[in-house]
Image (cartoon, rainbow, N blue to C red; front, top):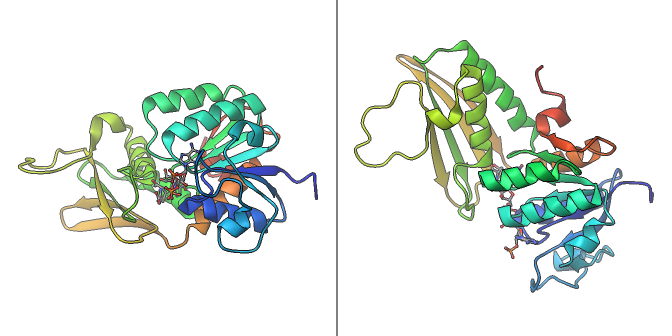
Length: 272
Ligand SMILES: NC(=O)C1=CN([C@@H]2O[C@H](COP(=O)(O)OP(=O)(O)OC[C@H]3O[C@@H](n4cnc5c(N)ncnc54)[C@H](OP(=O)(O)O)[C@@H]3O)[C@@H](O)[C@H]2O)C=CC1
Ligand SMILES: O=C(O)C1=N[C@H](C(=O)O)C[C@H](O)C1
């Protein structure tokens, strides 16, 4: 029992933090050794099971990331960019696995995470579900097969509390489309249309973000041309798909050398 990898969940009271805490607690392949929230949070010092409205599980919510991470084999981190950069540095110190689901990371954040990857095993993806990672590979293949007569549009929908747009998943799908086409996403992305925009630029990859209610996460990649449209689609209806993917990544990362990996590595979907 005690040789199971010890997992710390960050942002425990968040939508994903709660789901991750439940999934790790129920797992027979890992043990929950710590949960984190920010200093001053109402949950600090409480048993996380009770804080979530259930029975105690013997894990107390802490605001001390250094102490928690130093006793763990992996951190599951779905929080916010500033927190994730801090946790990556601590994961590097502790030489452990850092599974990053946080989206909305800036180039500066990414370069700090990359530096942490010299000592930590970092697995980062804007979406940890099997379905979306398959969709990424399908998008690349369809984009490879079609020319610029097909306009590519990525449409995403999320709940009304989401703070970043386009979603991390939409950016993964846009990147896959750009890779399939052999072009740079930065130079071809069309991320905000408003007013007299002029006609669509041939070859651009468009992004549209819908925010409403409690939508968990929906993504379409549309290839539209005169007379027909192909739409590749994914709907997440339960956050458990992300949490299960994150735990799978943490287990896959055990004993893996430091560096940066993604879910395609974990799921064996990466093409050479
Ligand atoms: N890759 C994937 O598969 C998925 C990624 N995500 C991403 O995960 C992130 C979180 O999403 P979601 O759970 O919906 O967001 P929530 O806002 O519900 O949860 C985020 C949690 O992180 C906490 N937090 C922020 N800073 C710190 C800190 N310094 N120390 C400890 N805890 C901290 C927040 O606390 P407080 O409320 O006090 O700020 C909050 O509890 C987003 O970036 C989202 O896009 C979501 C789902 C799937
Ligand atoms: O914030 C969310 O909720 C989600 N975020 C991720 C993203 O930005 O793509 C993944 C999922 O779609 C849910």
